[in-house]
Image (cartoon, rainbow, N blue to C red; front, side, top):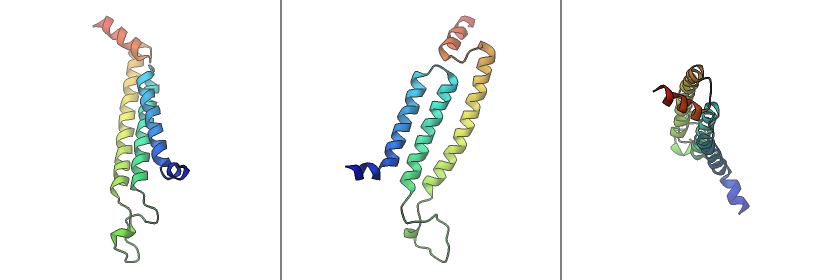
Length: 123
C-alpha cells in the first residue's frame, strides 16, 4: 500500500492541488483569490503532465554521443505542453489582473458579488 502511494505521489499531489484551486475558484468572492485559485489549478496540471512525461533512467531528447535509439530518451511532447501552458497561463493571469484593476477603479471593491450588484444598478 505504501509503495503504491509513493509511486503515485506526484499524481496524488497534482489532484490535491487541482481540488484546492478549484474549491478556491468556486468559493472565494475576492477576484485576486480567484486568480490565485486558477493559478494553483494550472500548476497542478503542469505537475501532472511533467510527472507523466518523465521516465526514470532516460535523458532529454538531445542526440549526444551518437545515441539515436528512441528508448534512450523521454517523450518531449509533455514538456512542450507544459512550457506552452505556462506561457498561456502568464498571459491569462496578466489579462485577469488588468481587468481586476479596472473593476476596482470602477466599483471600489474586489468582491465579485458586490461588483455584480453595482453593475446591475447601473444598467
